Length: 201
Image: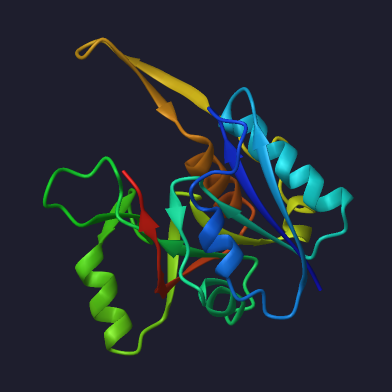
């Protein structure tokens, strides 16, 4: 089995701060490579990363953001679900101070955030598998053949409307766009409550 661990990184050419946690990660006996993609928009970087996973014959792609610190057993726990898409989680950096809002959205109407305490309670109670609507791609394991199912571009940042009241353009990020594509294609997305990542701010 082959694994590509890849980081989209916009501002710097050197290895991002997450690299030590990637080095320490249990690779589960897989043949693996590490790749940092820089330049232009993050959606373009993610598309190039996915293309590299396909052309390189990798079975799995682990996407990690440069400001994420992985727990050592993250990959082992994500692989345990044998899902096409399985995510770790972390507290959202845009959450208000004192809030435990995370990167994960629950299944149901709308896009509802999970709170960190709720995910920890589930983990402590032995509930490790959650079906989710999606979330941030800071720690996300994807089976590479999924990209043959989803329509290209797999990742796309879109401005979706102009809010006249606030004067702001509202956008759909490349992460949410990816999970909307998954949902439309009938691909189920899961998260592991044990994979709590550090999120540097």
